[in-house]
Image: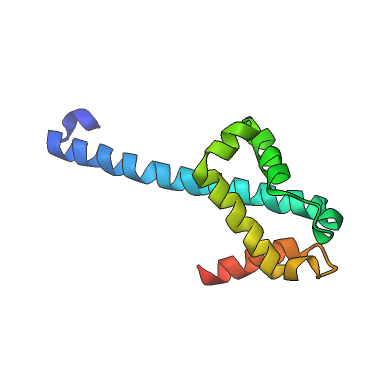
Length: 116
């Protein structure tokens, strides 16, 4: 198909494809990290309520899921910010752990979909 296209058109198509692919792949990666943080807090909600979960523990869990070391996760500012942002959302939705129902961890998903 590209061989029959004008060179300029083929180039623009390739540039467009290159620009769009990382965005969707990036958002998919973000969602997998957000889901991992949610699952970690859900699975450890009792400790979360008692203030016994640390960002380090979450970064280690995310790192395990991504096949990265804690140091690699810690060095990645974007990844750290994503984890911290998700923890802040959960903290707000679950009223800083005062909510007794651990399902509050996932209730924000509905809120985010409504915003879209």
